[in-house]
Length: 108
Length: 242
Length: 120
Image 1: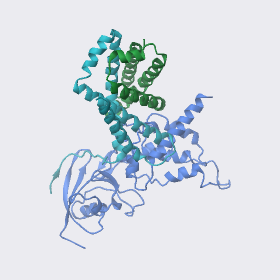
Image 2: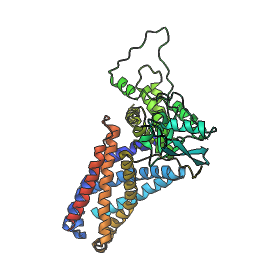
Image 3: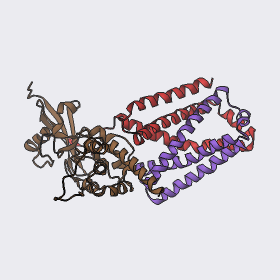
Image 4: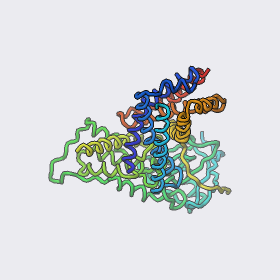
């Protein structure tokens, strides 16, 4: 299992790298003008492009973050049992649900 | 210059996991090594002090201990290079079960070496012609870069992932596996990728690089393990496509 | 003869590769903690622009702005140190790419600076 998690971690990292760069650029651009809800939503609502971009972003993050957190907990606490794996799946599901909800909220 | 009046303050661990540091005053000498210091203490102050050494000249790796927090060969460690404020603290190697004082049990280290597939098995017999090794081939160069390991366990002691992950095979075992994976004479190369891809294998390495930092023969286990990760990934993808 | 104390054999971890590992791991943990909060804030847009606006007024608070700055730095750090790991593991070995650590810290500082400048 560790081998498969490793591969998922690295692949999601490779996917996240360009997405993060775009996102950082976006944040800096948005902050430049000062955020207002209308300004953000005007740009994002109805956009298939943004839906796809952030949808993929959320999916990759939901894979990458729980695997990373699992490594940290296994190495720095005594929690190494199967219950940890279950907890990480729950974390992934929670991130997926709130993430996709957020994408929906901002795009629809 | 030879100065008999100079004394080193040396703290040496006595006991097993439970025990205490005992302080000794040791005469400082030019070109003194830490092994010289330990030997002096055993001969002149503490006959029951347990420690390991063999060659005394930096080729066998038996004298490895933790000196001022760093895993080193004590015969190859000049006191003046590591002494801090006239003090030396000497402990056994980390990550291995203690036997007594400065001697630790190397069994788990060698168990993991075997588990990683370190034992060579030849493909040819004594009546076959000698296999030709192409020294400049990428595989042979990769193996040669990692082949000088004498299993001293300094890297194993330096590695925090070994401390934090009891299943982790460790840098020396995985480095050895890498040399055999690249050895065209080895009969069980296929098995190696399976073994190092199990839990506790190469994928547990986080590339801290402490092994590289401390290896006395300048081997780079991190690079070997990265090689294993690449080959393991290739192997996994190849299996998917079958 | 004196002595005493407890042996907790450590290793001197003062080398660049280990520092990079710690920073990469800690930034990842902090980001993982932040991410659900971030998603929840955005989800509030579901309640309409007004809910998001009142939250964006909240976002003008100095400590909130400082946290946002912190997160930009964390994300940049985690990204660059992560790219170093990917390079070490999947590209042919070319040294520990220790210069990447310096560059990574620099990039994060630059991103943080840009954020401060842009926010004015």
